Image (tube, rainbow, N blue to C red; front, side):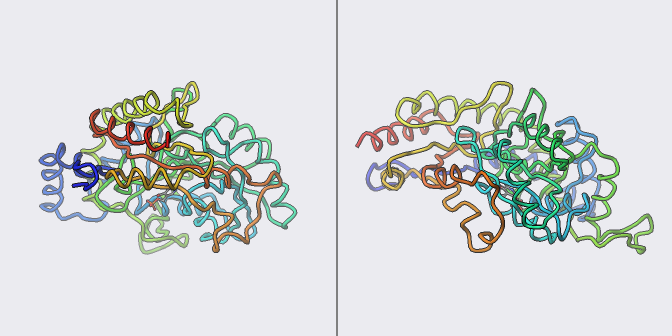
Length: 382
Ligand SMILES: Cc1ncc(COP(=O)(O)O)c(C=O)c1O
């Protein structure tokens, strides 16, 4: 209960509401795994991979232990390693650049577009030039579909073609979204996603997947997730990882996938309500024509140094907010020695100082949302 308003505190993401909706179906699915005991790569894993491939129209889905591992596996399958440069945005979650360093390659930061928060294709040529000046071979780009909104895939594909770069789409926050009326998963050579519980399609622990139309890449990924095994499982053909999606998590995800389209609709309805309620007082996110978002976050931009005051005012009324991301990667201790593209990363710096995310999930009811909108408007008017 919130002392100032006498109203209950609002969850930022309400994972429990979905648990209430799906309770018995998930309990039955988990009980099935507990009875057959095939906890690693059991039949539910293959079934879920087939369902997910059908959902996004891709040839292959290779599940694994996390979204981070999905990116690592994809980079390894693409043969990226020491001496290679991989372009990525600076305004993203650290895993996007972390995986590049983990495979021994070098991340090169590109700026983002202020309206979409996504990597700006116009910065690619400058990042390739910076990579070459640093003595690196530019090999790939990891665009991120941040906060649930697809990057401008056509512009990325054109720039990647011009610079001879592979494209690994980081759809950890955006799986389920459409671009050019196509679901994410079939853009670029491969797409990585995360099933972390807070993601739009999350499981009850860690999980991830690589999605690809490329048969050769898919075969390498299936080998890499089991220590690099060959056709004989004790004759390993490459150095791999132990990175599988647990069978229990696959069983849970199959149940969640059934209601995912309905949840995406609910998230879009909530985003529309926020836009209508706040669009005249603050910069609200917009969705380019031909795309949809799955609204992993609903992120507004507050200028004039008023962000902390807004967060404090909402907190006092039992309304949580979050800042994704307060420090762009090029300023973080672990990443600041990596190259930045020639165009600089000024927009990433500006967004880091202005963004703030409001509660968003598929079970946000209208009364709760009105409370958030009303409190936000009052705080911004002060
Ligand atoms: C953009 C982005 N990439 C990668 C990841 C990594 O996913 P996971 O947490 O499943 O390892 C995340 C997760 O937060 C993310 O937001």
